[in-house]
Length: 360
Image (cartoon, rainbow, N blue to C red; front, side, top):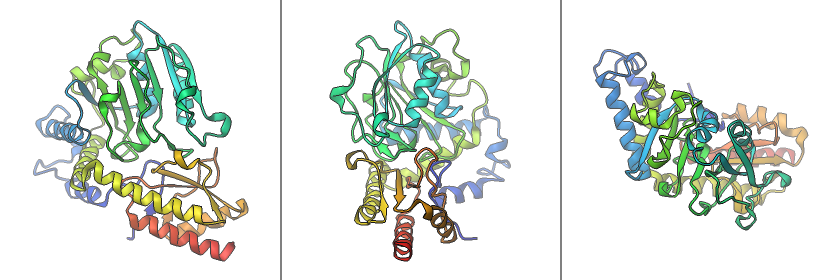
């Protein structure tokens, strides 16, 4: 069976080496006589898997000692509630910078728990740029400032980490997590669903500064309480064992392929190729301001929307899968995460060039 180039925004393509390793271990993990899916999460075998994954992630991100690394459930959407529940203490105020759909959803959920203000938004311009930092209206008494470094749907990415003073910075890194080095010390909380760059759907990574734990509001479910989960090594209840194991294999793959510096170099090269082709064409167009373009999610529009169905059908026939854009944006979207090989981007550009020749 020939594998396609899968441009899905998530669940997304995984490294072939990771899938092959999981396949080899599926019935019998390292002589245990059972699959990881069958192990007790309290047993020595799975505890060793969990500890190794945690150590490797700490190594990849150079996580400082005063931060805890948690492997939770509920996706990034679960953390839309988890963040305010854990960080609201003396203040129940938080400021949000909104640059796309996921930022909007985070605001909607957080408003259930406190006073949420939108400090800046690019919605009026169709979420095609990053609001200038000098226009952000931040409150000194906010418990935290939240932003989304990369918006999966609109294909908008912050070029750097915003400066917010002494207020803890919180980030939903989901769709750009592990795509480049991150200075964890600049954040109070980082959270990310794994299903983009870090593994399959089902496990959510939360990296939290220790001094921000221990004061969750009383209504916080125990599975969302950072302190309780940290005290239990993320095993307060049965964790997503297989997804955690797969994330660990993915961390090993990243380490073996140049670490986050290697991922950043590869990802920049892939994105530059694709944007370069789009910009050189009169048939395709990317709507995002060049300085705010995502390296992970590349939306593009055809000159004639009536050709969209033909484009998608022919792309599928050429082994280029899941290129349809989100319904709120339209057009196409190519998600080119860590595991997308450069050959996949080359194949997409070749197809786009041929489609333009036939239909332009």
